[in-house]
Structures are given as structure tokens and as C-alpha cells.
Image (cartoon, rainbow, N blue to C red):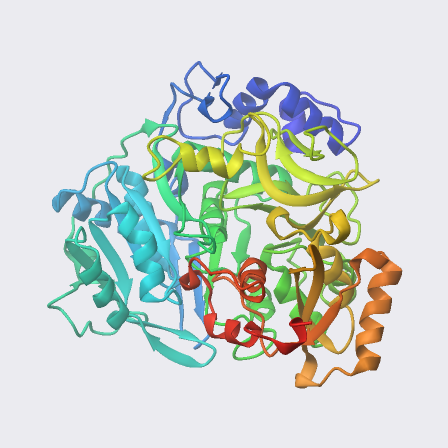
Length: 622
């Protein structure tokens, strides 16, 4: 690793580098600022420690501008590429990106937006969304986005809390072969959020904007604006964007992140963990409503080009994303674990594609099972670094992820994020080897600066510090392996407790989803006779029925590879699995339904109609 040479380290293993980084945080973060060539004044105070975990501040006297770091390349090479499932394609050079960001920045100044104001994007995953975000960051304006698959109520629940002055949207988008209008939903959002004084709209395919009464033409504004090339530098912690919790337990929490915090963390993950270099090409399949969009944009700071895809991941054909990797010679390809599972279930083989330039595949969103690791190496690419990564919206990055030193073992995440003191605690708060709670023992730069509207900090404290005193509790039930890797066993709030034994849901999923007639599983606990019994729902290939023979096969596999305690009491075939907008299985909502409890925020679920199946199931009455 070039960084080890830079800091004059001769590591024996990744673990030794990680230990050095967490034992010497001031040296690590200061040296990494220099190594990644962050533009700005680093200042002299690298870390100002506070006895309260989240009041510790990094680079407190530094000054930087996020967009200045993103737009440092001034060439006619491609900065961003875009492909729609419809086949519509666009590209923009570094010089063009710089110009558009500076013009939109000038317009924001003209209409009186100032640092700290909010701009909201209800936008598909297009280049215009990135231009909008970078123009905000350049001026110290706070950006927040929702993807267009969010319903009106879900958008209002998020944006109304942050009181944006400007909304940016689009006329329509494509998904799974359908052309879907956004404009009507945007009109309703504007009515419901009185702080929105102006709405800019761009056309998905560069067509004329029809409704010029309620919307201003995004591209006309750029064409008429002057260049504002002033890059004011802000504090390291100056807010850059607001992301949202899934909202399945109430109104979404408005998680506010700082510009320097995310810049240095993303640089670290790309450069030190993913071996991303200048002129590389990065592609993550995401929407503007998932934190991986923010992460991907951060890749521009490394001098890499980034590539966007908007639409369904397997439309118009199953390998449209992999073909995009081939055609654009992508170096880092990122997807959800569910995408890889889908390819595996369909027995897809990429032998007819040239993926020689892909050096790393990253997978997140849910745990990547052992069989899926095996599938990638046998059917996608044998000489690739397959890195399962995990962290989340809370830090717009990773706590555990791949690295360049350790071996890749099936089903395991390789190691900890450099500079972040990750550990596993038992219920009493003691460090253990084995299964327990994922924690962070010392402050780290990319923790959120606050929750918007949470003036007393109560929601923030309850989210991360209510379980262990002054220790970040991440909410994942996890296991450290003999290889010093990690396996996520499920969310802590979804763990099962039959007979008082803690079981991670991912342990069951890993067994079930490797069975050939099963496409997906969902496992929850049902309150029953003063205990909890495990209920497993499965969807099947070609909608085939499950008989006693298949049920016994599922149970025997779980019993053999896990334990008798893991075996579900009841197995039910379901037509569909409810999930969040980012594709995660909604275990909590199904658990609430089968236990007769109220679901607090059904708008957070991408397919809420799927929940009807789980109501009043006769199998669960006895």
C-alpha cells in the first residue's frame, strides 16, 4: 500500500496497520489528509477530544470547500457517464462539470440562497442531480435528495422537516420498462411544503419543459448564468447534506453530515481500502435516495470518473449492469447483495462479457452469503477482489469493509475501517470474540454532526449511545471470525430470542436462500405462549408451491448447519417480501403485523401492499 510507504510503516498484516491507525489517530488522520492531497488549510488541531463521544471534533481549525476538492481536475476527459434503462445515454467532461456547477452556484447566489439554507432534490440518478448537489456544496448550502420512487407522503415526511427553500426535480423517469411521471407528485410536494419558494426542473431526455408556470427550466438557467468561480472555504464540520433513516419506526430521522467529515472518510475508503487511483472508473448501482449515491459522488475527489445507471437493475436484460461495466471498462463495480443473489438464482454466467478491467466488486445492503461469494468467483470473474462492505447512512460510509492485505473468505467481510476502533461487545459491554453487538469505542470523523431539528441531541443519543455508556452502538448483531473477519448476523432489533437464545436472522437466510427452489426468505419472531417462535416466509422460483417434503428439507438444512434452536416453528410461502426504498427487507414491519401491532410509518416501505398478505394468517393463530 502506497500509504504505508508514505507514513514509513512496514506492516506484517492488515490488522497491524489498523491497530496503528486507531492507536495513533492524530497521526493517522493528519497524514492521510496530506496523502490524499485535500485542498484546504489543515489547521493545527487535528483532534479536539471531548469526554462526550460525539462532541469530539476533528480538524476543528481547518477550512475547506468540498466542491473545490471534487472539481480539481480541469480536462476534457469524462467525469461522469450516464445510462438509462431506456438506452438514453449522456456524458460530461471535467471542464463541463466545473462550468455547470459554477453557473448553478451563481444562480443560487442571485436568488439569495446563503450558506446553511437547504435545497431538496426529488430526482432520478442523473448528471443534473450531481451538478445540483455540487453547486450547493460549493456555496455551503445543505443538499438533501429523495429518489422518484418515493411517494408524495414519504417525500413530505422527509423534506418538510428540513424546510428547503428550493426544490429540484425532473419530468419523468424509467423503471422496469415503464415511463413514470414525477411532475404531478412534485406539484403536490410543493403545495405541502410552504418553505419551497422556487422549483427547478430538468427534462430526463433534454426535451422542452411543458409546465413553465410552476417550474423554472434548469438548463435554461444554466445557459443564462455567469460563472461563479469563487470557492469559499468552510469549517470541516460545515453541514453538506441531510440523509434519512428508513422511517420504519416513526418519522425518518434527519441525519446531518459535515463536508470535511465525508470527504476524508470517502477518500480513505476509496484510496486505502479499494485501491482506487486517478483515472479509474467507478460504477455503483444506486438511486439518489440511498447513501451509496453520496458515496459514489465522493469518488470524484480521487480523480476517478463515475458512472450512473437509472432504472431497474435487470432491465432490459439480466446483465445490463455487467454489460455497462464491459462497455465503459469499469474498475470498481458496486451492487447490493440481493442483486448478486438474483444472478445466482437465475444461474447467470458472465463468460460472454469482457470484465477484464473490473478489479473490485463491492457488495452491500445486506450480508453477502458464502454461496454468493463462490458464485461470483465461478461465474462472474475469478481474479477480482470481492469486498462485502457494511456501515450505513449514519456515517455515509463503512465500519467494516475490504482491504488490500487480507485474504477473502467466503461469507466474511475482511476487516475494520482504518482509523475507526471497531469492536464486538456482549450484552454487558465487554469485548468478545464471537457473536455480539457492533460498536465503535472511540470518536471518528464521519459520525453525523447532528440530527436536524434535534436541538437537545436526545434523538442522536438514543440512536447510538443508549445501550452502552459513551460507546457508539451501531445496531448490527455481528460475529468476529477466526480469520479476524466479520459476519453480520442481522440487525440487533431483528434478532430472535426463542427460549432466550439470541439468533441473527442472517444465519437463517444464508441457509434458506441457497436452496434451489427458494428465491428469498424473511424471518421474524412471533410472540407465542410467553416466548418467541420463529416464523419463516419464503418466496419461490416460478411461484412453485411448498409441500411437506420441501418444508422438511428447509428445516433439516437449518438444523444441520445452524442449530435446532434456529429451526422455524412455521414456514409459509409468501407472494412478495416487503422492503425499504433501498431494497432492504422490512423485518420489523412484518413482525409488527403478525403480532397485531401498529406500523408507525408505512410510507417508508417501497411495496406496502405486500404487507396485506401477512395480516391475520390462519397458520399463526395456533
